[in-house]
Image (cartoon, rainbow, N blue to C red; front, side):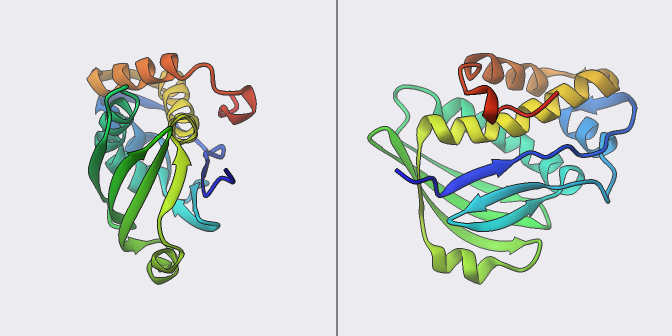
Length: 178
């Protein structure tokens, strides 16, 4: 199956973060506004994800979603991505060893909502979906561990690390560089 879903984590510039309330706060404080964005590719349409503005908001939904999708009994889920510049509703349904993702796009950097809607659903292997998001999580966790002295509420950070430990069998070429 040709991939219709991919993520490029990039290497955003980071700055020191002495103390953060939680993982979202660490991400929001660690990455400057003008730093390199991550890129989500949806049926060949590149969608920019700002580390500071989008990913800091999406993490609260992303980690639980990946935990759920990775469970053997997973059948379907719905998630609302609610940042200002990446707002969409995804309905995710298991189809064999794959996931079908139907999206309703509300806003994206570059105003690609109509084009994304025209491109339709994404069908991606479950393992590939988790592996693509794991690249992004690995980048964030690596940067938080290197730049943040303290994360007060580390629950989500711990859960992200556990996800990465379970997905450690993804090929090295897919992992974010350290």
